[in-house]
Image (cartoon, rainbow, N blue to C red):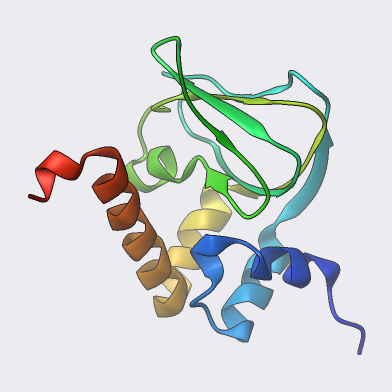
Length: 140
């Protein structure tokens, strides 16, 4: 049986490095591959979160309150916070040049968290790591 190329792409995502092969294959079944052009807005700060994006190729620029926060690249991801808390986007994300992404919907993302302890643990560990990086004063 030929290996799904999405599985290979997902294996490069830092969030999923601790997940089992079975968990990554589950994610691949739910993920849609999309190509976006330069300047395409993936999400806007304040909008309700509807999807989670894994960057396969290209770069995504992140702004919060009109200020540049980061530029993300292959293996990075964006959109998980609004999906987990079922709230509003905390930043605006725009493609910086053409980009290839894997997109997982809100429903798919939640079903993954519900069905896989591997994925749930990986997401929680990554969220804590992001909080430590963004708010080091909170962790002393």
